Image 1: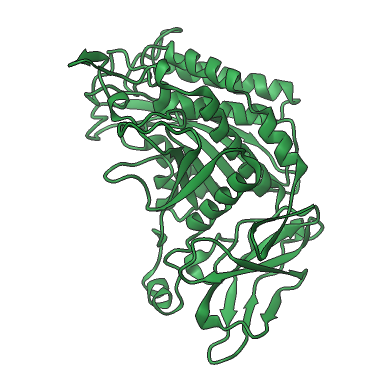
Image 2: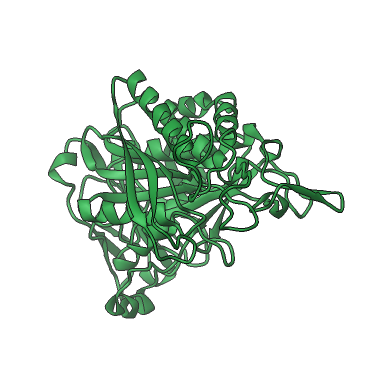
Length: 442
């Protein structure tokens, strides 16, 4: 079956992704959010010894849930704590062990290639250093952790070519420490990370602006990559790539997954790292050059974020369970799940993509051959192009299992171009823009 997200872009519809979407349970997400709220506070500096209150109890429960999921799939997940003692920081002045919970589902073809879904464990109230007051953090960010757990429950029933990581990251409100620890360790261990999907607030549909809408979501994605060199900057000035970083093309990929597999959901790709003056756990990965985006609700309610529990002038403040729409959280969780599955079933994005065609009627793209591990997995490649002011890819051509192809009478100056890998069963990687600006790495 062929479907089109754009009139001139062919796409093979995948029934397995429809099945994954249908399996995501709002009821299970609701139960998980309720459980996380029940710990009273999950502040990074809060209680660690209690079995019922504080960050320690919360992270032990999360690990136990990942362990249950792994047991149900024949120990298919490698579940572990990842930690580092942080001190001397503005928001962590004294030594504190920042502990995240990681679950890795190893790929069968290319296990050192990773896509990651993350949510943040910790919560806070008005004073970022107040670690004793109740901080339910129902939406910010029990919703993201619950979504990550639910994605693991669903996707652990399948086997994928690449690896999928489910991460409950700590220390976000105190300075993005869990993401920083994980990104630095991944770099040290040589992980080939192709996408980080950070979920931070995926459950609210009623905005501070009075808008109530459960049909839209935002995907924040930075432009020029953070690890760009001076030489890369000079080249980009003449060849483009400002809107084609790997993070932007991951965002476009997720946007198309919403169009194709998530009923009644339209995503907006926001050309920005994050919201004004604010941050999330995808940023430490971006800092090291890894593709990463933030997936979240469209209409935020600031009365429910980072607030002491109180009522003032008839306004109720606080991030409580009644502010979460569980069906909406399930919808965004399903978006993550189908995007992770599609990328993990697809081959790795092409490496060393190059382009030529100056003063010519034709445009030639080339790329490195598939790795030895993926030679039997890959079917071929698809070239994409679009007008330079178009937000999404408009045209495509499948070119077979080659490493160079010339588009006849398609002038290089009039379009942006990219290449995606295609598996034998039709799953495609994100599109790779030529040169350093768009590279996903080896």
